[in-house]
Length: 143
Image (cartoon, rainbow, N blue to C red; front, side, top):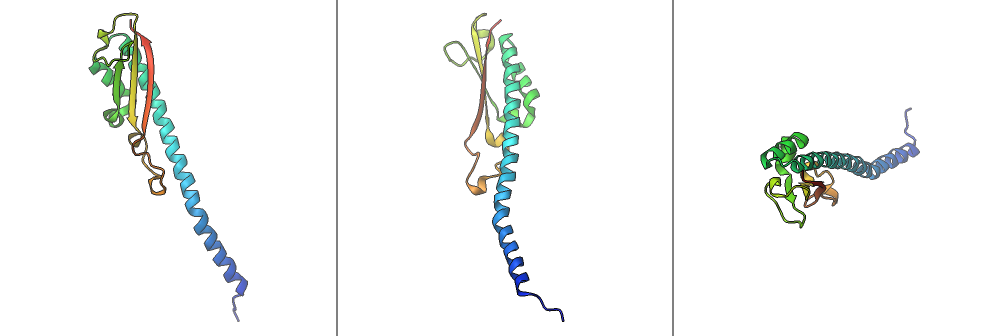
């Protein structure tokens, strides 16, 4: 006779219930960690790109060359979505770095939508990257 013990059914049912309760929390933690890692990586890329674009802007390079540098650092996908701004000493937008006199500071501001940097993995639980912007800036002296 192969009779199942009643306590075995209770244990099996409680294991199923525990799995159903723990799995969504575990999934949120894993997806959140992945999203955070991708955002940190994108931020690091932005810092490198901003530093290099700032250095080249300080040398007076043309906007096309600055865009090429940006694409080199961020890749063609992210660089299309990135917004590059050059500002003079008073915070006014400048089209060409050569417009800034030598010795004056040139500020480079890079903005990238967070959804371009990482997939929106936690949108289904209410933590969305929609509308969030990653922004970095650097200041160099024009040579």
